[in-house]
Length: 272
Image (cartoon, rainbow, N blue to C red; front, side, top):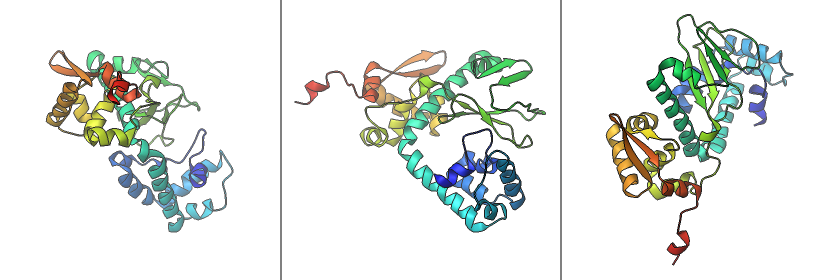
């Protein structure tokens, strides 16, 4: 933590090389890209960081291209991920999936304007400008490149973006509070042991109503597999399914909600 807090402090800036575009393919891909960052870019971004806070002496080695220092950074990120992220991965994934499903429906039902208007109050769409609450004043001109919206469990209050305007435009925004699972009666691994890993992920993903196609896309499984898992959960009374046009829309039943909240009705009678 002490190492990472120096490079990624709370504040208006941290180096872009810590969040490489390749990390969209997972931790290992991101770390490989990070370790391959050019010496010039590392030095430039650390110099920018030094304008916002006083940096310790070991930063000079990192800025100078010291491979050992860069290896330390990679090891610290991997260790932090194992301790702070992996144990809660199912919970985080379910919350982000619920937010993504909501945004997808806004887009399908009301187009781009509906998607962007649904981001109020943290963003305000005033065509052709998207106004975003941010800690620094500035303008980002897309120049036809498009804008990638990334829902984040950890981003709070305000969206964040990359500092370098020449990098692919990305806007990381906080998911809505109602999608955050702050308490579950059957936690991550316990739920996986009870239902199986994929089926547990399906159940957690139904924090808000979701279609079979959205489930398959979010969990990276086939639509046929998503349909089989929802059928089992429906037979168990944990979810209900209704038709929404040509799509099957799945949502938690009171029993499914109770399971996740640890308040299964009649549980006392089952202890006998």
